[in-house]
Structure formats: structure tokens, C-alpha cells
Amino acid sequence: MSEVSYALQRIAQGTGIIFAGTVISMFFGFLSRAVIARYFPTSEYGVVNLALTVLSIALVIATLGFGNSLPREVAFYREKESSKLDALISTALAIVPVSSLVLTVALILGSESIARFFNEERLAQALKIVALALPFSALIGTVISISRGFGRVREQVYFQNIIYPTAFLAFIVLGVLLNFSFTYVFLAYVLVQAVTFLALVFDVLKVGLFSFKISVDLKIGKGLIVFSIPLMLTGILGFVMTWADTLMLGYYKGSEVVGIYNAAVPIARLLPIFLNSAGFLYAPIASQLYAQGKLGELKRVYQILTKWVFLLTLPIFSVMFLFPEASINFFFGARYVSASRALQILSLGFMFHTFLGLNGMSLLVAGESSFIMIANLVSALFNVVLNASLIPVYGIEGAAIATATSYFLGNVLNSLRLYQKTKIHPFSWNYVKPLIISFILLGLIRSLNLKVPSIWHAVPVLVVFLGVYFFLILISRSIDKEDVELLLAIEKKLGIDLEIIKKILKKFV
Image 1 (cartoon, rainbow, N blue to C red):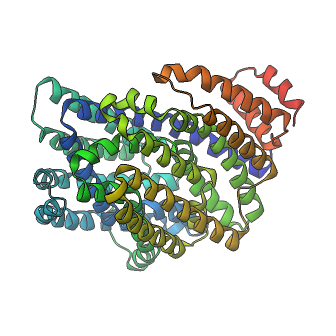
Image 2: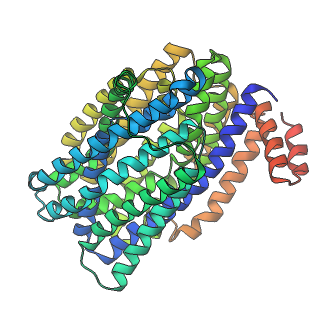
Image 3: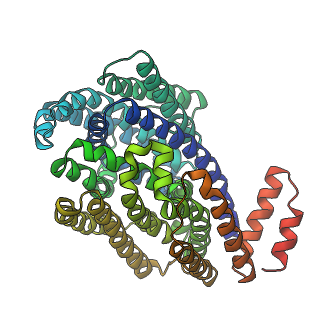
């Protein structure tokens, strides 16, 4: 097996596990949101989204960009300077608690001002409570980022994808059954974060992954912070780009409109699920290839991986783009169907992000943290200007247009820089052909203007679409040898016989 196929196999194995964990996380996360949205008024559901958005921005600042830098840095230190790896880990674990406590105090003290900005009195009390979760969230993210650098997925799946969302849902359902007040939602959030952190620490110590030493190597700490700060700013800008629509809708239109819009947003964010799952192990594996100077192998891994992610994401995109009303009604109920056009627009933006692959993460592997920050700054500023221009006139559709357009701009900038720096791009001929086929088929179905009363009525249309689509992929010979090698590896790993599929593929490879 070639080095490219071996790398792809490792990523695929991790992707499968992360995808399963992400599906579980999203499923229970959706249930939690749906329970809150259905049980509380739309304005209070809007307050929940505003509070968690502000907390998310504070979390990016508190972790100083370590969430993105540590997987790459740990992988590099393991490859180049293994003797200093313990010092790197202990330094990161010493810095984050201090920064997160500072941000917690700042968030509590500034809660009244933030609430006045959004003209929402209930937000102040919500922020004072959820701010207490910040140190736990920051340390959870840091520990999991370190484990990623070791090429592990266990900590992410068990603790962030399973324990946290299931426990939060359980607490929310309990609160609803016992008719607790709205404040209980935020208390439950803090308690679940604390329990998740304690469980994670216990597990890491039990398996002996690394020790929790509280010491600082000033030289390593300085280098880590210098590399990470642009990523922290990138994270802030990323949240501005992602959440400017929610925040500015709250400013211009109020919490009730925010609640309606946030029926479309979490559905649209399903689209990068395979991309993010693949990216979990892509970073450390790509870092090792880059450190060894194997750019040709890295480019091939990027191209094959991007094609897989696109093919896996296409069915999800097709449902929400072709049948947005049915999608929203299925998850959130008829009260939120007015966000269907926003869902269509957002799905286009997130799908374009998927279509170009892991460009930002590849730039990070190449050490281009400063450019990532600049690209996100341009996109975020563009997003804010568009939101300010479009929301007062077009409401939630304007917010969706602003977000989708800024995603388009940011991904184009990152992809152009990645090609300039490494000559890496996703467009192999066997990727371009499926793209053309998908655009034509989606356009044809869209032109029929089909209306379905529920998501279940959309299933037959989707089955026919996918059947025709994959048949056209086969006859267009869009299958690569690495695809077949991965299939053989999966067959061996699972101990199943895929003889029929192999016979079909042999005729078209």
C-alpha cells in the first residue's frame, strides 16, 4: 500500500469514529435545542443562542488559539523534538486556566453592558451563569487538542461528542418535566461542563496519555503563544463571521427573530460534518507529511479526501437545498418554517466550504497562521458590512446572504494562498466530473419545483437522485485507485465480503 493510501486509511478510520461521535453529538444537540425551542417562547430560545454565542467568542479568547495550534505543534514536536514534548504540554496546561479565569471575571462584570447592547435584559443573568462554565470548557478543549496531536480520537468522541450532549439533554428534559424556570437551562449547562471536565481528567490519568504538570517553559510558551495568537484572532474572526448574523439580528430585529433564524443555522451546520470529521486526524497526519517534505503525497491525500467529503455531504445538502420547508418542520416544527429560504442560502455557503476541502487546516500545517488570520479578517469585515446593509431590509434572508457570501470569500482566499504556497488544490479530473454531474442533476430537480409535505416524502426523490448520480459517476470513470485500496482496507478491517462492489468497480476504474 502506498504512503498516500496508508495516510488516507488512517484518516478514514478516524473520520468514521469522529463522524459517529459527531452524529451522536448533533443528534442530542438538536434534541436539546428542539426541546428548548418547543417548550420556551421563541424570544427565550433567542436568549439561549445569544448567551452561548457570546460564551463561544470568550472561549476562543480564553484558549488563545491553542485548540487549533496544539494538534499541529504536538505532532511536530513528536516528529522533530520529542524530548521537549512534555514541556510543551505542561506549558499549555498552565496558561489556559489563568486566561480562562480572567475571561470569566470579565464576562461576569461586562454582562450588563452586553445585555444593554442587545437590548435584552434577560441576557445579563444568563451570561453571569454560563460564564462559570468557561474554565471547564477551555480546559476540555485544550486536553482534547493535545490528544489530537497524538493521533487519538477517543477523548473527543467519548467526552465532547457523547458525555456532554447526552448529559445536557438529560438535564434539559428533567427541567422541562419538573417545570423549572428558564434560568435552569444555564445552570444545567455549567454543571454538565464541569462534570465532563472531571470525567476527562480522570480518564486521561487512567490511560496515562500525559501527566497534568503545572509548569511553564518560557521559551516554548513564547513560541506557542506567538504561533497561536494569530489563530486566536482567526477564531474570533471566525466566530464573527459565523455569528455576526445572529448577533446583528438580535441588535436590529430582536431575540424572537434570532430564535426563528436559529432554526435554519444548526441544520445548515450539518453540512461540514464529514469535512470536520476528516479534519480531526488530517491535521497531525498532514503535519507529519509536511515536516518530511512530502508535498506530492500531501497534495494527493488532499485531493482524494476532498472528493470523498463532497460525495458524502451531497445527500445532506440535497435534502436541505431542495426541501428546506420539510427540513425545518421536521426538526423544529411549523413555527420556524419561515426560515426555509435562509436555510437554502446558508446551505450554499456551507457546501462551498466543503467543496474546496480542508484549505484552512492545510495552511495551518504549512505554518501560515498569519495569512489565515488576514483572510478571516477580510471575510469577517465583509460579513459585518453585508449584515449591516442587508438585515434591516431583508431580515433573516439578508443575514443568510451575508454569511454565505463571506464563507465563499474566505475559502477562495485560503485556497488561492494554499496553491501559491504548496501547489495543492482539490481539482483532480476525477473530482471535477462528479462536480459537473451534481450541478446538472440538482439544477434539473430544482427546476421541477417539487413540493413535499414532510421529510419522509422527500426520501424517494433523494433515492432516485443518488442512484442516478452514482451511476453517472461510475460510467464517467471517476473512481481512483486509492478509492479501491481504501475499500479493500475497509473490507479487511470489518471482515465483510464486498465482492459484488469490487466486481462493479473493476469495470470502471
